[in-house]
Image (cartoon, rainbow, N blue to C red):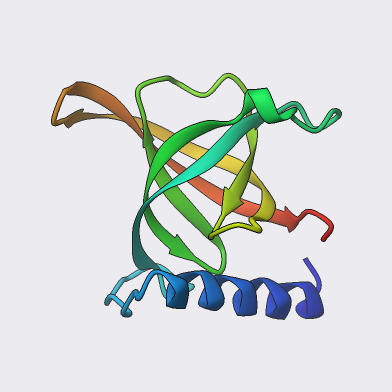
Length: 124
């Protein structure tokens, strides 16, 4: 990722966080991770064909940083990459790589806690 792309991504993430009224949270990871408790749209991505509208489903996000985000899901991811629609309409679309999917105990039983790293922002 170029410095210019990284700065654009940081600016977009800061905008998304301000839309949610989110305050910074102390975190050991690099990239100033912040709570981002909201429902967003996400679809599997095979890195060849962009997902169709019907491929997107709602997921509950947990946190967000300039380098990635995490979310909860009752399904294990089928692909190594996803497309996520962040923010309010008009959404900002990003391709992200799944870096971990851990089973956790949720309110309604076991679910997956999934961490992703941003790869790129999709065109405007």
